[in-house]
Amino acid sequence: MKNTIPQEICTFIQNNHVVSIACQADEQLWSASCFYAFDAVHNRLIILTSQNTQHGSLMQKHPKIAGTIAGQPCLISDIEGVQFQAIAQILPKNEQEEALAIYYRRHAYAQSMTSDVWQIRFTRIKYTSNKISFAKKLEWLS
Image 1 (cartoon, rainbow, N blue to C red):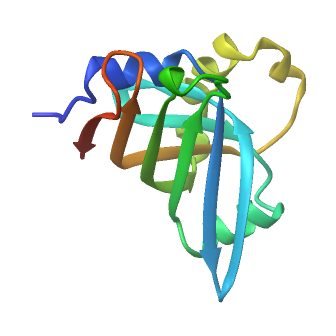
Image 2 (image 1 turned 180 degrees about the vertical axis):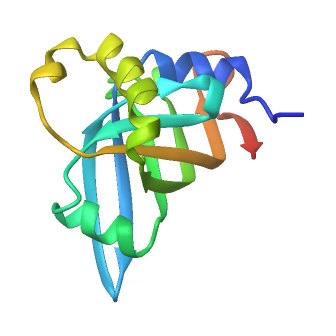
């Protein structure tokens, strides 16, 4: 049986579109912000980025990454976000069509771009929200 991400976390991820990721390999650290589309069926984000970028190169060498998705609220009572651990992978050609369909539904303008297609498959998520109760936490493990 698949371990489904709780709906409260899915809703937050679906309502946003920029992920910040941190990666490392060979004693090099790098972070990047990427547009994403959420695929709740497969517990993953789909991103487009070249394997030749600094973060793309590092993720190929060491696919375990960490990241955050958060807004920019002005009030402490509006803070909401996720911290996560994940595995990053360039999708093989035979898996790209489904992933691109998900991505293009969210970011139609990207159809004119050429880039590598990646999945960021969640392994752990910690969700924090002050909207319902202060510092409410919800965790999910794959």
